[in-house]
Picture 1 (cartoon, helix red, strand yellow):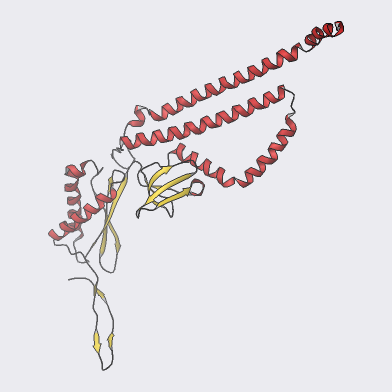
Picture 2 (cartoon, rainbow, N blue to C red):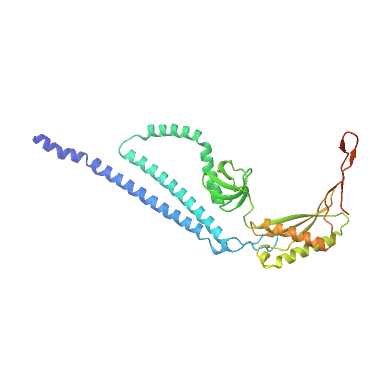
Length: 322
């Protein structure tokens, strides 16, 4: 008994480093990991706040090199887009930081308690390789989703063309983008499959209208009527804030079989180009009628011949109106 009593203090003295040092190092690793995670999350929060509160310079309207068009955007929509981007990016970065810090802390803890990391890393490498081959498309979707949000390629409420899916964006996630088309169908597109994007909602848009007139029309008179129509339209309160510039007559676009095609265009606010085009088309029709300019239309001449047994459509032709 005395020998055992004498050996206990010796055992404690011999293993004091292990009994005190290992738990202390484990505690330090845990506390250090929590501190690193907290600091990283604080930095992420600052980044998110900067996205949510853009500088005054970012809020100032920009000018393009093609003219003095002031590009106003819907403030509420822009704020909603920033909030969505900030929440998603913040959540993803927080998750990445948590996983990275957790894995590093776990590896350090296993090393402290004497578990060899080599076999574990080898096994994890094999499993990770297998998962990587099976989840290549999923990883591509998430990476593409991150780039879409970071670059602000499009957001909720934008009118986009993603290939087969054309319509208004209803949701942008890390893996999927949801687009509502003109017929009301909801498209679910994997972000990794989006190869190109046409966004009709960013900065400014252009209303383009082709006007066909008869070959015997005076083009100077046509140009004057079109310019006057656009000028009057922009002076009205309904379109003053929508049309960013005066209507520009680009000139003769083509010589068709039915008439001369003249193209006009005007810069508009995003998403307003279609309404401007429809109203402009109506006013151009009235202006050309007042100016005595004919709008050609196709005419068909059908010859009917009645024999004893059958009525035959002999031919057809096309001519300009008189």
